[in-house]
Length: 127
Image: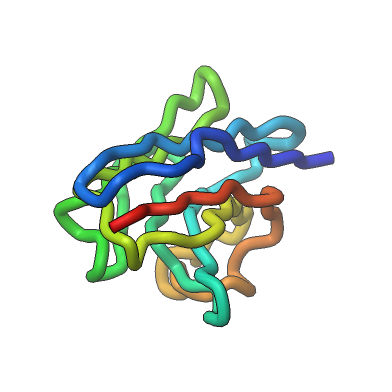
């Protein structure tokens, strides 16, 4: 059974930084990629970033490019999201997700591409 557990969320002032972690357990060897999504109040959940199993392939939504960095430590089965220069519009519940699908990159921004999800961690950025 797969379990994804996020941590690292919190309250930060605009311009500050947070580093989210997602610890995976279970059949992690089957993951081809992992990603981060977020859902702001009153909005749909949106893609933030994704990273391949090797770490050699990454992608970001335009609104976070140059500010967020996704990385992973396969020895620890953990994926990270370093969030810098945070803005109030980054306020959302951030979710970790994992996919076993080999063609994940083509549809990486779609929620349905990811079979496994964490419970989410709240990120709040004050102005």
